[in-house]
Length: 390
Image (cartoon, rainbow, N blue to C red):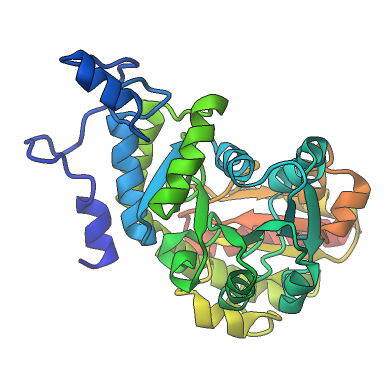
């Protein structure tokens, strides 16, 4: 099936007449015998034992996501950071070393820089645009390489096939955040990545009413992560899993609309005198545009741009906008705008923001489903207000 058809039909209720699958809200499930009870209690990702182990609604979401990502299995969690932290803690331990990109989601960077060292895990951050930087950072105790492409919020691109080739040569696992791209635009597992994750909160659910995450890959790795997951307890609720399944049915349609609109906004901003720089891999002038064209089917609904001015200029610009909401998310039906330096000032230090390449006047714009003309007119109003005040 084509992706659009698959997304509509992949969660059909097996053998049942319900067009919309039910929500299995129960926490415990019963067993018919002691033998059955013993078997299910030791089965990885058991659907009908106890909700911390798994749940039928959760299992349905995991199966659909595994299908569209080309994975053997998946494990849904209570948030995107639940997926990140549980995966890292499952695969590395004290004395191990992790290589990660310098430009990544702020929560992931905070975990790697603040939590991992307290557990004796060493972390080296590299420039994702320099493929050989990953190889130079590898040590004998390196167990994991972490990727995010396009990166949030700078929209930098990682050459996934090149980095996974380096990882395989050294026997290192790779873990990629595919939240910004979505499986509609990019499938890292097809390019050699071992594990891929999503913040389901974003494009997968698509309606800004779900908090969830997921990690996908080989069954043996997912079972290994599940063992840690049952102890950490970052468990997705059945209702969030059901809402995520609802959102998945329109994922392809929403992402394709956002791809087109984001490119139009990026071109408009790229030509505007009040804008110093636009970060969007769909632009021909993007430094990794050729890599993005080779490994992506579309370039996503997220872009960022740096205004001519400073921190206050970005604030004036956002305050003058009327269509997008000032909100820290992406991938929803309504456009959202935020100033990363302001959003992450309590999560990352000024030095860490600088290391991540996040300038004070950077604006991140997550495109929704509004009309392109309305969004461009609103951007023009914001840029005029920011320029006149400056």
